[in-house]
Structures are given as C-alpha cells and as structure tokens.
Image (cartoon, rainbow, N blue to C red):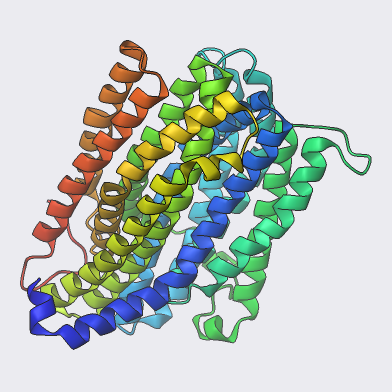
Amino acid sequence: MSLLIDSPARFRGEVRTTAVLAAPLVVGHVSTGLIGFVDAVLAGHHGTTTLAAVSVGTALFWLPMMIPMGTLMALPPSVSQLAGAGRHGEIGPLFRQSLWLGAGLGLLLFAFMSLAVFALEPMGIAPEIRPGAADFLRGIRWGVPALTLYYCMRYLSDGMHWTLPTMVLGFGGLLVLLPLGWVLTFGEFGFPEMGAGGLGIASAIMLWAQMLAFAAYLARSKRFASLGLFVRFFTLSNRPRWAPIRGLLATGLPIGVTVLMEGGLFIVTALLIGRLGDVPAAAHQIAINVASLCFMVPFGLAEATTVRVGHAVGQGRGSHGVRQAAFAGGVLVLATQLTGGTILLLGHDHIVALYTRDAVVAALASSLLLYAAAFQFPDGIQVLSAGALRGLKDTRVPMLLAACAYWGVGMPLGAGLGLGLGWGPRGMWIGLIAGLVVASILLGTRFLRSSRDTHVVTVTDGA
C-alpha cells in the first residue's frame, strides 16, 4: 500500500505497462482456452460418451504436460533479466539450448502418452469411456514435441516484452482446429467418423502448425534479428550444453512441479470423477472448461508480472521496484476476477447451454459453475503470487508450499467428500476451492517475504 502513497504516478504507469504487456498474453491464453472449448462443444454435440472420453483424454494429456510446460517457464524470467541488464548477446545461445531441452522433453512425453492408454482400465475409468479416451490420446500425442518447442519460442518472445505472437497464433490455431475437428469428429467430406480420436488428430495437426508458424516468424522478424536466435543452429558449436540446460532445469523443474501440483489437482479430480460414469464426467468437463477459460486471464497477467518483476531485478530496482511490479499485476487480477466471478454467478445456465442438450448433464454442470465462481479470487491471487515469485527465480519453496496446499489439503478433502461421503463432483469441487484458498495464502506470504529485503538478488536461493 505504501507504494501507492509514495509514488502513485509511477505505480499507475506500472499498471499500464503491465496491462499492455499482458493484453496479448491474456487474449492468447483465452484463445488456447477456446481450443478446449471447441473440443468440448464438438465432443458434446457428438455425444455424452464422446464428451466424457475427451474429458479423461484431455486430463491424461495435460497431467504429464505440466512438467515441461512449467520447466520451460524458466525462460521468460531468465530472458527478461538478461534484457534488463543489457546482456542481449547471451539471449540467443540460451534460447537455442532451451530448444534442445524442449525437444528432449517432448520426446519423453510422447513415449509416456503412448503408454498412458494402457492405464485407463487399472485407473478404474468407466468402460464406456475408455475406447474414446484411448483414441484421443493416440491422436494428440503426435503433437507433443511441437508443443514443447512452441513453448520455448513463446517464452522467449514473452521474455522480450513482445507478446503479440502468442495472441495471433492462438487464434490461428482455432482457425485450423475448428474445421478440421468437425470434419474428423463427424466424418464429413468422405472422411470416416472418428469421434474423440478425430479431435485428438486435429489437435496434433494444429500444434504443429502453430510451432512451425512461430519458428518462421522468429527467423524472419527484424525485431529478433539482432539476437541471432537460429544462427548456425545445426552446427557443433550449437550442440546441447549441460551448463545452460542445467541452469534452466534448476530454476524450471521446481516451477514444473509447482504447476503440476496445481494442474494435477484439477486433472486428477477429472480422472476420479471419470470413475463415476459418463454423466458426471461430461458435466465436470463442461464446468472445468469454463473455469479454465476464466483462469486464462489471471494466468496471462501472472506471466506479464513474471516478466516485469524479472526486468525490475535486472535493472537493480530493489525491493520497492519488485513489489511495485507485483502489486500492479495484483490490482489487475482482482479486477478481472471480480468480473469473471460475476459472469459465472449470473450466467451459468446460459453458458452450459452452449455445450450440451442433455438436461441431466446441463443441470449438474450448471451447479458446478457456482463453485467455480467461488474460487475466482483465491485462484487469481495464487497464480499472481506464483508469477511474481518466478520473476525472482524463487521456485523451490513455492513448490513445497503448492504441494502442501493442493495435495495436503485440496485433494484429501475433495476425495473424502466426493468419493468417501458420496457427494460426487460437488464434493471434489469443494476440495478444489480449499486447495486454492490455502495456496493463495501461502504463496502470497512467500512473495512478501522474498521481496522484503532492501536489495533483491538476481537469483533467489529458495531458502
């Protein structure tokens, strides 16, 4: 609060800068969320079982994907700190090493998803859901290497304060997925009707299109020409080097685990609900897809805050500058979460009607959206706090705090209420709310502690 009193003009300027930086990120993330919306709507109109299968398949796709996605989040603060310190010549080599890391992670995840289809029966997924979920996974796994490389390129661009490509390519992906998904799901123009498997294949094609388009943009853009991002990439001088990759892993793996802690809470919830049958699974998929769309707004603001905090550290602006950057993002998050919660409270029935014509599924999904409205504020606070901590490269302790909140509180409570006491999906969603509330308190407190020193160091050791 003292920031607002000491330098209100500078704080307003920081809010504007964060908003401008975040706007394309938010729109880009919303477009990514709309990809899930397109999948859910196409699957829902194909049938309740198809929607349930896509719900389980999506969960098993994103659960392992959280690790590489979070690990590569080490790139934006690293790039923004180098840029803030004027060390632009080091950005290109770091980016090229991140590509090697992304390629390796993508191949590992491809192998994992090839085996994941055999886990559906042991996990207790309802028999009617398993075939479609397996087909979805077999299709979308081919896009995993493209997605990890795409994250490298996107995070490089974000770290350089240039977020417009994320927005443009996000909507470009929609233009590929919507017609292709419709054709392959329903079997139009002579193609066989593939249901959930068709959506998986369409998603993989879209991911490759996005990655190749981003690579072409970075290679040709004058904005990035001085960085030499792809200079002599396939020469011995650009072979994988352990030192920079280890640095990215040291910062990024705790981020990946933290993202897995939160995302895994939602994903495992979807898998547990999948044990209850196609109606609960379909209703949960609708509600979680809407909640995910809402989450894309604070997530984009948190990523912008990561860059702004990292830039403040690189410029040596100390505790005052770091907190000013974080609190500017906080003001924006509180405003957006109030808007999102209000929309969910007032429009839940109308939103659900876009997804399904099944009255039973719609009634349950509509009630779950009220729970989603309840966790808008804690969800916004925890993701903003996590983003600010990433800007400080403070990642190890937040990882442990996230594990405590989501898996020490959220999952046991949700599983106990939902499965143990028979409250079903509603009990599981109460667990989600509890985990997010605890995370918002712990991570917010951690940021205040990490940023209180007079001189904020470039790399917080996490102690």
